[in-house]
Image (tube, rainbow, N blue to C red; front, side, top):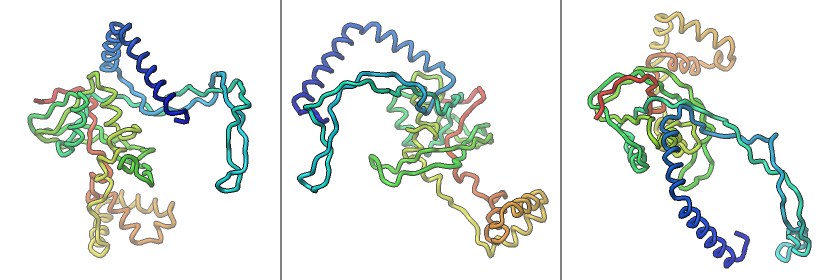
Length: 294
């Protein structure tokens, strides 16, 4: 971007010419490699979702540059950087270009997507993902993710406040699914796209792009005045819960001093607590069972 405009246009033109020449020359080989890659992706079991730089491994490359100097700015009167084109140099520098898996997941048999999330389905179909639907209601044993932690950008990017650093807690649950809910089998050439958009901890997942923000807001809670009697009854009927509360109070002085915090603790550990709060709505089918699909 720092080069003169005519040089930038000419360079882009020559690069495109090179692409066309290579594709024309190696069309058959490119087609064969694409088929091999598709077959490998369809059968691949584990996918790396994120990478980390290996700072111990590096190459050495020749770098050509100009001496960096400073002079007085005609704008501010303070020092400003410039590169002296009368002092070119060539030196060897380190290039860190080796990455290792930072997050890897094993694909499920299929993802089960409730039909309410139609925008996600539209995007999957636009990207050539084969999508099926359940013919009738069914209870399925699914691995469900609960979002245990995440960060959100302070400023928007492309109209979204992106999430990142997502951590999930998987739980095996029996989930009521309904006729019309979507089934996405992970045996396709589009597997990488499927996994990297539907696994919430992947950097470019639909979750990180705010498609599922509604699950992050708690819809149900309690009134302290009303819940007091219910909480007392819960402790009487459930000695294990009472013991759990006492153990937590012994570890947490702030909890022991707060009546509201103790009610909150009881509420969160009872059947009254909203089961879908922070639960990622897409389930992972990890057992290869026959589904009645259309």
